[in-house]
Amino acid sequence: EDMRNSLASELAQAVVSAKDVSSHIKATKVKLRTAVKAKFKDRLRALQMASNMVNGLKKSVEKAKLKKGVEKKSTNLGNMHMVPWSLVASVVIDAASDGFLLGIAYLASINSCIVLAVGCSFEMGFVGWTFCATLPKKIPLWL
Image 1 (spheres, rainbow, N blue to C red):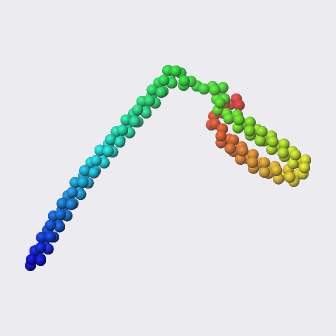
Image 2: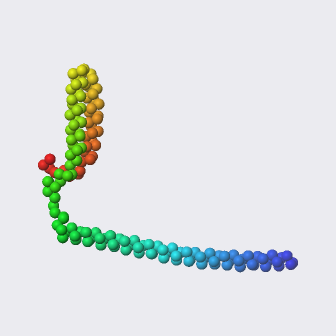
Image 3: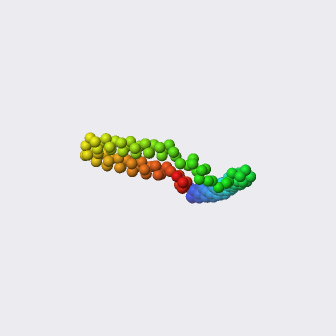
């Protein structure tokens, strides 16, 4: 009977201890949730402030551009810098040298000229594809 009483008392103490631990865990969970919400709100507030600052700077830059008259319509002459002239020159030189080599190959033999022509057509296809990909979207019409 003593053993039964001691086991019952130990069980009661374990239940009380488990309830204490459970309540402590719940309290800690609430504190942690509150702290996370506070940190989130602080970071959200900081992001909103940064966004407002960026928008304010953007508006002030636009106002400054309008005051200085920077936003004028560009003419065709103003777009000259858009064409990569060094790339145009290198493609023209490549095509001319390929044609010169084809002419020399034809003088040597028609079969070698055909092989070189097939190879040059593949090469010029890729050169043209790359050249077109590097050109700007809008090129002046007078070119």
